[in-house]
Length: 419
Ligand code: EPZ
Image (cartoon, rainbow, N blue to C red; front, side, top):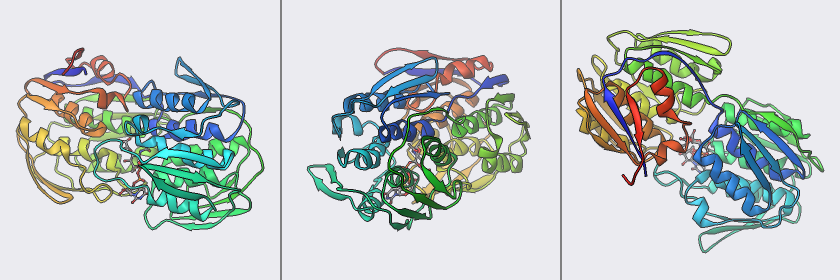
């Protein structure tokens, strides 16, 4: 496992191109199982998770090629309707094949997920929604074993707004008989991108982008070409990199509307942000003001930015409160930030951060994707050498992050080896 080394402090300057959205391309790759034929998907980021999903689709029988940020998928010869534990344990999003397999092939055997270490992450909403559509799902030896004579429309009401469950049920409903209504559906831009992909394939979906989706099942869908939206979490992470390094950068290939909640908080913290059509300009002041955040479903402040925001608040001039209401134990980055000199009091899902004047570099261990990003941001600001170990976590969700930061002037490099 490689490590990323940073010699700080750095001040970022320049412009950087964002990649396609990981959390849009993963369900869209699963959705190719819903129709037979050849797809071309563009603006696909070169990430570990994309490789993992491609591997899963090949196990199921699809042909998958990736080159030059394009995926070519041929789902004509799918013949094995299983997602094995060895693969699902490395990426929770593998569960996205459950709905499509039941909808098109009427059977599926998918391991219960593992994924990154953000506490217990149940799939009860996925299972209950599919059962309401008429699937018969049993839990056997750590697997969800599903069969479905013919899925039929239902009125589904999620008591929690779940991105994954919304995606899975949406993909199952588009080939179900009759009308399905999903209440309290996730409104994340990645789900909107999935819904537009399905509509282009011939699905009949109303209410896209709202918390109530109405689906009229169709008999068959067709393969299409499609463009993935920019990655809003990558964009937000780079805005925070500029803020924590008192930098001045331009992000290209972004949709500023998708990062509105972060931009509002950055402005409150004293950062100058200017939104363009497909770009964002950001200039950070010397002094960052402390600003509280509470995570919420889109368009609220994303839980996927909680760790990165905390890194910035550790160096703010004053105290702030950070509350994660989505994943209440997503705080593995706290112990690592403390190693740099951070002052953080944690109680359940609430962290009180007391700003300190600076960080001193240290060796840090990354544990999950967004915690790793938080540690890299902190390393940019820290004085001296910071090493972030086990960076395969960060490679799951950020395309060549160290090269992009280096092009913005950071003194950062990757060392290969078993760290
Ligand atoms: C998606 O995960 C994202 N992953 C996560 O990003 C993101 O943090 C999360 O949504 C929240 O925005 C992908 O899109 C691949 P949820 P998901 O279902 O779908 C509870 C990253 O860093 N819940 O929206 O797994 C759950 O425990 C990753 O890119 C149930 O109770 O998240 C959580 O408290 C990390 N039962 C809440 O809902 C269920 O059946 C929201 O989770 C499903 C979820």
